[in-house]
Image (cartoon, rainbow, N blue to C red; front, side, top):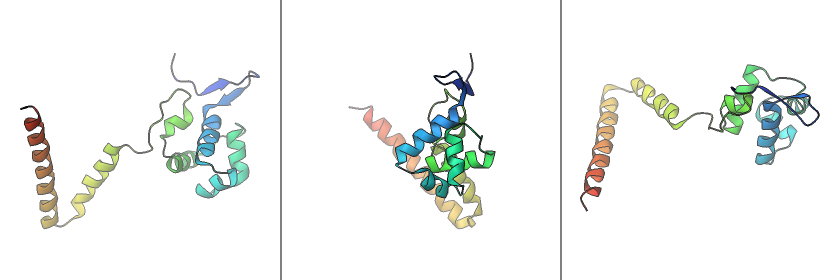
Length: 132
């Protein structure tokens, strides 16, 4: 069976994974509901309603929660989703590489040479490590 959006609590009522996750993550940070509200530009009463499963945050609020807790949106929303960072290292590197296009031609050439040098260094280390 696939991921569960809702699950039952001890009383059998529906409880969103989000409610548990927000409270758990907030507690891990040592934040009050008011402090979390400040972090995501929300009202403390909203945080309470999120944590009790009374309201579902907007898509924008879910993204802000994911960013502030550095977890993926699916971790907040899907009960059995694995905990992963908001942005993976590949995403960050991809963004940085895309930004290289904004550099001048000379700076782009420097970045390219630096990447080539690092790749060559890594390959040489791997070869040298294989020759004990």
